[in-house]
Length: 102
View 1 (cartoon, rainbow, N blue to C red):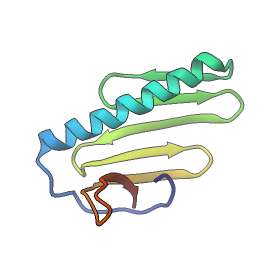
View 2 (cartoon, rainbow, N blue to C red):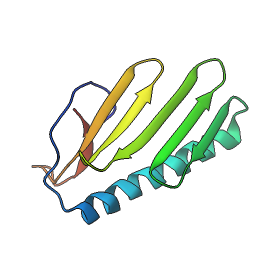
View 3 (cartoon, one colour):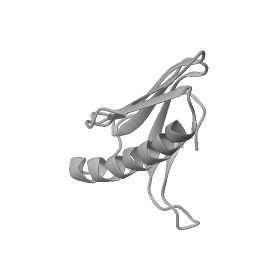
View 4 (cartoon, rainbow, N blue to C red):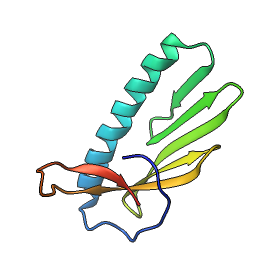
């Protein structure tokens, strides 16, 4: 889920587990953005390889998505909506785990 603003305390997860889960998310987002980049002339995507994705859209601005290991979150900075923080939520009643905005 993308949207919302807020802060949360550190998640209660082993660091290696956080990195494994967050790396999967960063890789999936990178793949989707690179596919969009191939189809558009106004989009530039860069994955720094250390959990930071930078997306530049001509005439719109720059978005930055990055892992925040100390808080075990994913942060998104948007020139339009400002910052959003996401935390991983373990399986709920519906049996699904997800990254949710705080």
